[in-house]
Length: 78
Image (tube, rainbow, N blue to C red; front, side):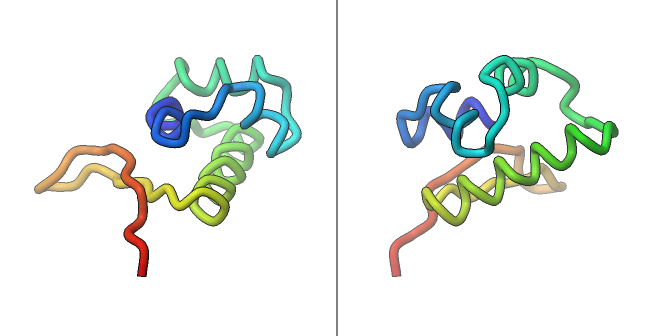
């Protein structure tokens, strides 16, 4: 979902890495690795990414449930 979110706002991996103060390689790994991470450091980085993209760029992460799949959408303007 990180890759999809970046695509919505046309953001490079390096730019996102800079926003949350991690190496670009970290973003690359997160985009291809385990979809259900348990490593506390990785979870902290994922939360920082989600928070930054939601508050700063209007991205909304949609998590899978019984009726929908997962994905990302732009938040509606009020």
